[in-house]
Each structure stands twice: as C-alpha cells, then as structure tokens.
Length: 203
Length: 203
Image 1 (cartoon, each protein chain N blue to C red):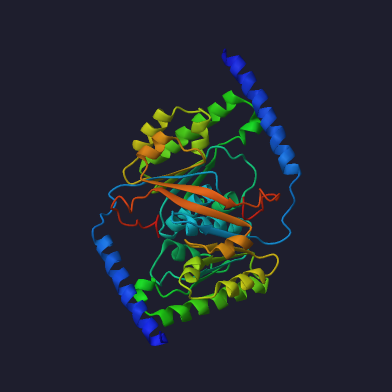
Image 2: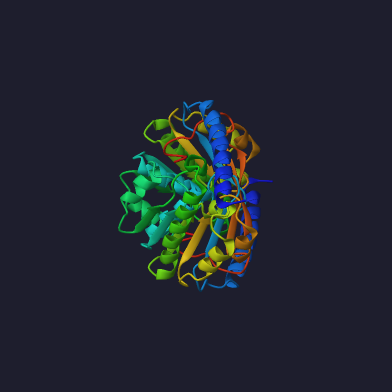
C-alpha cells in the first residue's frame, strides 16, 4: 500500500469514527445535578485523581472542600499546595493518623464522626461545587460510621454539589448509589519492589 | 463483649499491625532516581491522577513539565489552572485534537513527533522533577512513534526526573520497564448512563 493509500484509508476510518462519536454524543443529556463519584481499589491514584479533579475545578474557579478522614497532621505536598489556595479550597485534615498508630478505637470513631459532620455541612451548604471525602471508604470498612447514615447524608447534599469519596474497599451500597465508580488496580508498584514512598509523588 | 473489651481487642490488633508496618518499612530502600510511572486502562482518572501528582509536586516547589499529545487547543480546567503557575509548570498542548477530527495521519504523526521532541528535551534537561507525557500511550497504540525509540528516550532521562505516561492500551514493552503501573477500570460511568462530560470534572 502506498503512503497516499494509507492516508486515504486512515481518513475514511477516522470519518467513520467521528460520525460514530458525534452520534453517540448527540444522544447524551447534560447532568442536572452534582455527581457522586467513588475511587476505590487497592491501586495507586484514588486520592491523587480526586486532587487532579480539584485542579480542574480550580481552573474553572469552582469552590472546593476537602475532608481528610484518615491522614494525620504530617506535612504533605497537597497540604502545602492547598495553603496557597485558602480562599478557594477549604482543606480540613480531620484524621488523627493511621489506625495502627492511634490504637484507640473510640478516638478513631470520634474523629470520623467529627470529620463526617464537617463534610456533611460542606455538601449541604450550597457553597461548594466539589467536596472530596478522602478515605471515607476506610472509615466505613472499619465500621466507624454506619454506611446507611453516610449514604443518606451523601444523597442529602445540595443538588449542585459533586462529591468524591476515596479509599479502598468501597461498600457495595455506596457503589449502588454512585454515578461514577473507578477501580484502581496495581499492575506494578515500587513499594512491592522494596522502595519507600517518595516526597512530591506519593505524598 | 463489653465496650472496654472491644477497645482492648482493637488496641492489641492495631499494635500488631503497627509492628508489621514498621518492620515492612524498615526494610525498604530510598529511591535513588526518578520513577517511570504509567496510568493505563479504560477507566477514568489516568490523566487526572497525573495532575493530582503535579499538585503534590507543586506543594514541594518542584519543577513540572506537561506535554499533551492528543488533546487539542480547546479550553480545559487544567489549562486555565496551569496558566496561574506558568513559572512552575511548563504546560505544552501539542496535540491537534482527536484523531477522528484531524483525519490526517501524516499531520498526526508530525504532531506526535514534535510533542515527543519537546518531552524528550524536558526529561533530559535536568530542569524538571516531574514530566507528564499525557496520552503518549495513544500515540504508541496508533503507531505514530516507534515504541523502541520512545522507551530508549524514556530511559535516557535525567536520573532525578520522574515521568508519568498516561493513556489506555499501554504497550507491554513500556509496562516492562516502568517502576509503577496502575490500571484504571470503569465500574460505573455516567457517559455509559447517557450523560455528557461535565466542566470542572471531566475537563
């Protein structure tokens, strides 16, 4: 096949793809309300993709809230970053650290409850276009909050508020009511190859 | 079991987990060079998680480069965002749009080659802590650039430069040489439910 034939074939194929794409898009509706999104799975990128969504939202001057349910008060790249955007991102680190460090179930439950109340207020207020409830799935997995109560709260959010819930082991009940669910799977991970987390990438 | 018993049991279990975690971490090495990371799969969050990593890197005042291989010049949240950080993020939109819109294989190849040269210079310069080669996997899938040449280029990067390659259908050769590979899988997606992409979330 000559180079010109190849180009012609390519053009014909692309015209077909374009028509198919346009047809598909023409039938689609606009979202009338904020989305409920979940990033789960044991792979990397659950919280990170929620932060990437924040970056997009900030580009469009949206108001964003973040509640971190598990992570402790140590220094992370995200915290340093959000400090510069205090007027646009309401970033609340509510977790006391990993559960194996606190070793106190009742304190963990109290911290989870306090974090949830903050997130609930954000979602219902109408002041936020996007609220990230980071590692809420872990809170649910550990039975620190009843899943029915949390789902009821998520569904009671302001209609224009999109919510991102992250963390492995998202409960089936949450998947059932979510609009978007993505599973992150490890194909290959440097932790498994014996390496430590890297500043500026992993935290 | 009384509440006190439950707490005691929890504490004992957490002590065990903490010890296991510490032992695991103590055996780990520090990364001596920048990582080669790949986000692939047909699910959402591949580019978005790379952007979330940028947000972390910016928090630590790292220098970041982004080359978009496919996306065209339309307005996206990420572009609007990166405009504010022009001193820290070198954001280059090199793509001419989706291949079905350009319908010109030779123009696509030329655009891919030009984008690759920009990315290669960034990776080798030593000026960037993190370089995102967005949708490079699509370029490889379409045979717009030879995979051997691209891998050679990725491996020739400055030793402190971490690289993120995104896009579905990452070639096996790339997965073979990468340090971190995550696959994003759709569990549930609003596009499938008949909805359009949402500004501030999908772009």
